[in-house]
Length: 131
Image (cartoon, rainbow, N blue to C red; front, side):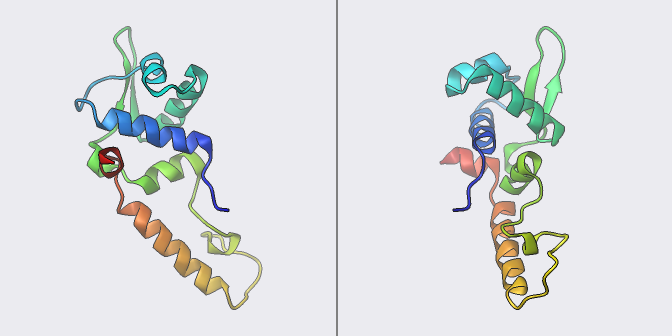
């Protein structure tokens, strides 16, 4: 079964919550933990990953926190998934590097992966937050 990690799932949950709030509103890990029910250390970890992946901006200071790096309708599910998990490849041979075998199914897997990635690129955080 193809599955994303809980960290990625939590990232989408936190981003959807942030997308449903006023644009530009700053969120802190403690508040996001309380509203989402996700443990504070996990929320902190996810926020750092998403900041490193340019999905979130970190604002320092006593009134600091995190905000979306751009409007939710401009952040795609593909970007989030890649920020947390790395490049999207449902099989080894569908990755950018490809695999060592030159078999007859490789092209099919690459086509499937491209279609899957295309769907993720057309789905935004705003779409996901809308339910």
